[in-house]
Length: 59
Image (cartoon, rainbow, N blue to C red; front, side, top):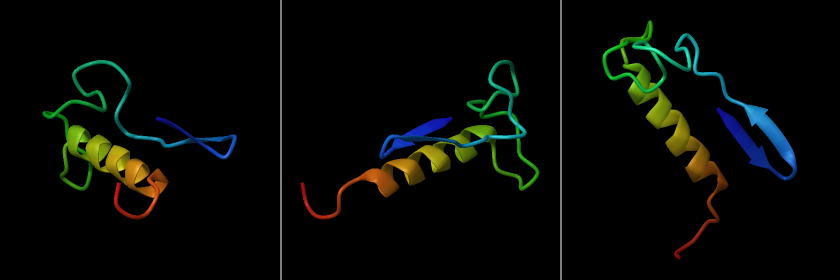
């Protein structure tokens, strides 16, 4: 997963999940060593990036 901020690109690895296949990073049926699904881990990562880049305060 790529994240761009202030002209810089950061790569966020979603290992051990591959990009494609039944064990991909969006699979709800493949699990990480910590017991969470790859889909849960991907969702948590995306939400953290969105929250980190959102301006503070009400919209």
